[in-house]
Image (cartoon, rainbow, N blue to C red; front, top):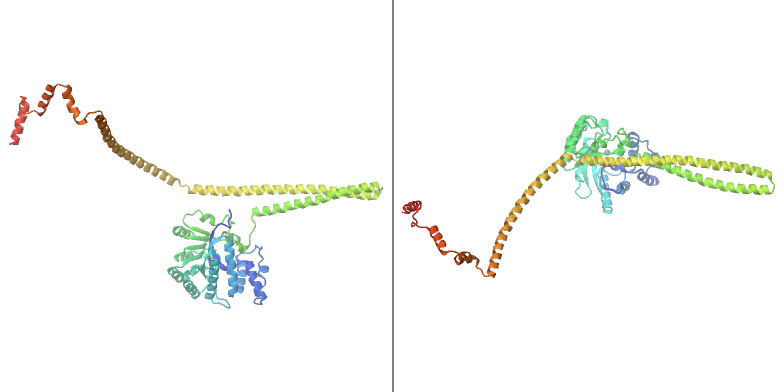
Length: 505
Ligand SMILES: [Zn+2]
């Protein structure tokens, strides 16, 4: 899968933290040329490939460059443009950039944010596939007055037009205002919430900012999202699950800055990914500490080097073999001419050359052996990765297979099916009845028609037929009996008749 092409949403990106060292270098170069800075080249101070940075060494240095170089509109525009370009190239489609409004030597905090919003809008009109919104950050070290002015700015520049401010954030040095002191910002965040701004906070980012009091305070602000979530306690975990909060986790930054222990395997993403409810947003901050090579990449690189060495050995050996042929020719010539001295020297040369060729062959075979072994390792590694992927996929499939639910569905199906069958039966009966009525009537009609055709009147023939062939006396007698009056002489009948007559009176 191409992870770059995969559309992504980035919810936790600090603007200044997303400025690449190359961009910083470009801005520095321009300022240096016009005599606006006497700082050293940031690329020399913070080389791209250098990995031994951590939070304590890297950020202060990096921040000082940001604050000293991004001071005017041109530099800020250049920086935000290259940041957006990078996110666009990474396949990000929705980006929430956060930044702390700050005044510079030439601009107010409001002007700084307005420049950013203008640049974002311009970028979006050129690249409509990337939507960018701003989150304004309040720093833990800020005064309450500063925090209020940031909130004020956020409300004024709220997302009314298409590129605006969507939320506010609490960030900054985790050791500042420990033990719940951040409660001083509670009114500001409550007001932000009332104003309809989204709230996200750096939550339990370090041990110092993971105290019970602080976490309780932060959760009381009703944040929609939590950043980092490394040192949270059991109570906070429960709240996260209950409220189904969105977690902004950062694997690469946490692992590379050694904010968590146990590498990628030990990262708390492994815990949260299996918990139902909370949503997880993964931030990618790979650039900040440079990329480290994975074991697979190292193997691949070594293999490439080995293959190159083998190729070079082969080339040298071919040259030596040519030299060998030339030497043999020369020895023959010398021998013909009787120059025995030269012949001996050339013979020694030949022996030496042949030994080298042999040595090259054995070196090549050694390298080949190592290369093959590496290849085997790589294949094993690839196989392991593939198996790991398949296992994870199987695991998640098993997890998503809810057996009780399946059983319930099957039972429901059976019940509904029974009802359906019963209804079908009733339907069939009703239809059959309806059809039978029709059939009978139709049948009568047909019979009548046939009889008519052969000259018999269906309604009369049955009455007349007996008179034609039967005994009229018997028929008359029967009729008399059926209609019977009082003339019969049966005592029971006479008695009944008498009673009937008395009733009529
Ligand atoms: Zn952050």
